[in-house]
Every structure is written in C-alpha cells, then in structure tokens.
Image (cartoon, rainbow, N blue to C red; front, side, top):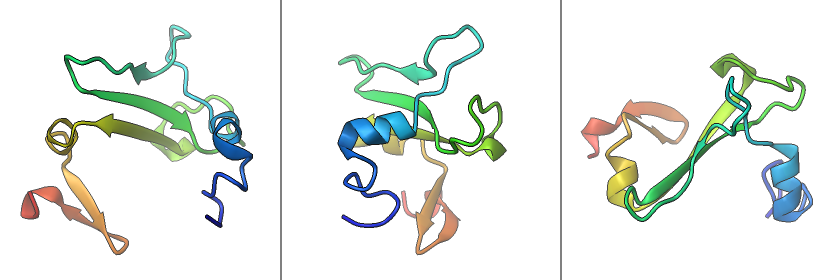
Length: 93
C-alpha cells in the first residue's frame, strides 16, 4: 500500500496509532465506545492533524472510526461518499 494512509509509510499499525492518537474527552478519558457483544460495534475518535494536539472541533480534523456488524453501522449513516461526492445515504439504503 502506498501513499499517506499506507501502514508501511507510518511504521505499521503501531506507527499509525502513534501518528493519529485517540482524542481525549473533557474528563481525560478516551473518546471511544469499546466493543461489546451487546452493541456489536466499537467507535473511536482520532486526531488526524498532529499540528493541533488537542482538537476540540471538526475543523481541527478529527475523524470517527467505527467498525462492527453491518446492520449496526449502516443504521447510523446519513451520508455516503461516492467518487468524492457526498450523497444522502437514504437514496442507497
């Protein structure tokens, strides 16, 4: 894999985690929802802009990463990105 998002360029998985750390909430806890078999997904917010060490708004380039059962993920989507164009997900759901 090549380019900015390639794990090899960032030092493998640990390099990616170090380069894009989890965001802390105001209490000092990680801004995340850990996986559980009840909810069947997990979610974390990462700081994608190392120039701003403590992002507080979307413009600071925070990103949400969610993985889990498709029915749990897709049900939370309002938009879809197709060929660089953001569309309402309801058209495809």
